[in-house]
Image 1 (tube, rainbow, N blue to C red):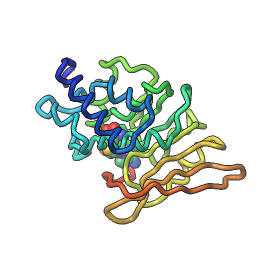
Image 2 (image 1 turned 135 degrees about the vertical axis):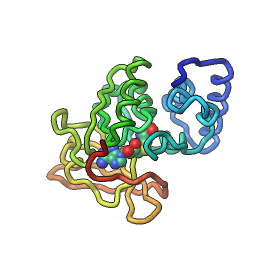
Image 3 (image 1 turned 30 degrees about the horizontal axis):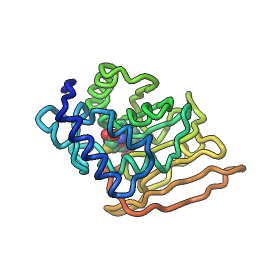
Image 4 (image 1 turned 120 degrees about the vertical axis):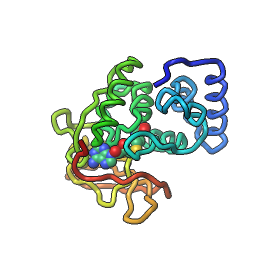
Length: 217
Ligand code: SAH
């Protein structure tokens, strides 16, 4: 875990932000998050430079930190308002949770891999990101104790749409979830309407590690 941020890292971040802009990300708050959050803190020291390439990268327990562009798109689709209560499934490195916290959300984030959970919980504490509550457990169950949520973001590829999560969403709330039964998932945004109605929008193909049931201790 590195906690030194240098001019060189800032320069690399600046380049990454330019790249995200070129790829069509226009939301200034999201771009500011990428400019300000030292993404290399979320990777092992030896791979620090990979933090600022627009690629997914392996972290512990055979998982990945999502590609920056994917984080930007999922965050954009959530249409975050400061103060939103957001549930994230798949804490992973903790980077996405920090982006949401940076945007003023109160974040609840669940991870099923114990080793990764312990490591990331420690990192988030050390970085001092406020308003992120880390939870160890199976994301399929959500976190009913803190429901309802304004927004839910799933950062693992789901082969079924988790009903229990949808139930924990406020009316008018969004769930952004990569969904598909093959190697590639469609990025869906589900909007919860009155009487449990749902509007589905499709934002194209993405590739995620699988959304798995149960926990891994
Ligand atoms: N948001 C993360 C992306 C991590 S990859 C980041 O910013 O780095 C997806 C994560 O989802 C993995 O860590 C994986 O272990 C986790 N995951 C998969 N199925 C899960 C489940 N049922 N509950 C909680 N986490 C899950």
